[in-house]
Length: 323
Image 1 (cartoon, rainbow, N blue to C red):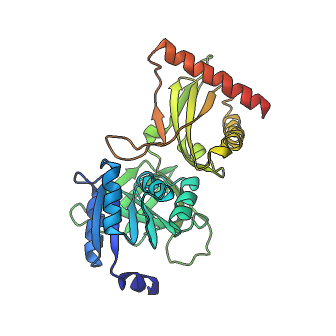
Image 2: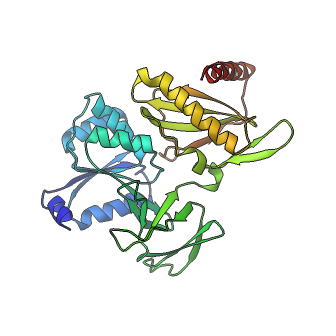
């Protein structure tokens, strides 16, 4: 409470960066919350040109930034390149999975705590994570959350329009057994992993198996800021990697190869081919404004594209053999 009172006493200016050009639940909830504390607000749509981002931030000078982590990362890059300067006391991530490397980057760039907020269409207020070691604290006073046979079920207790509807949620939730907690809320590890994010592969012998986001979204290497997986064939995928320091690419490549080979070996999927492609930036989906962890691109549309892919595979194998 002292922290809250201190924040409110300073005349807060809150910037929300996400998809805002429609009736998005997150945008409406943030707007209501900002008005509730009497703060000044500004919305910045993810599709807005970067020149307008710079102008808005320079004029508004926000004290708190809320939004998709992929969107906040873009602002962080503007800050790192000295195109804008900000003095913020909180960064609040919501709407997408927050990778460990990206969290570290945001905390270092903005020099403040990153709060990871968990919500869904069925209930916008499900939980919050301020320390990834502690995990997510669930708002179990506002929701009745169950886990049965690996499935998550949610009953929202504050929705007066559609009361007591038990939803099946496709996110993966694992309750923590630790009884030591600073707060009277249940702790859990939660992955914003929809069922369509599972990557299925098939070997030449017809054996099918999958990689779940649970297996791949915890990759953590110093200097690896963000990443995305793209399925390119029935037995192959690539990892797009964005790094904070170009000189660390060889080290990051070696570390990622070792971690990924271990993941595939534990799943008995050693025949699955993969390679790493470094990119300047991983952009959010143009339609939704959110960054996808997994993109399905099973069909290589041209012979040239297939040859390029195979060349990359051979190059990756050479590096892997050297490791």
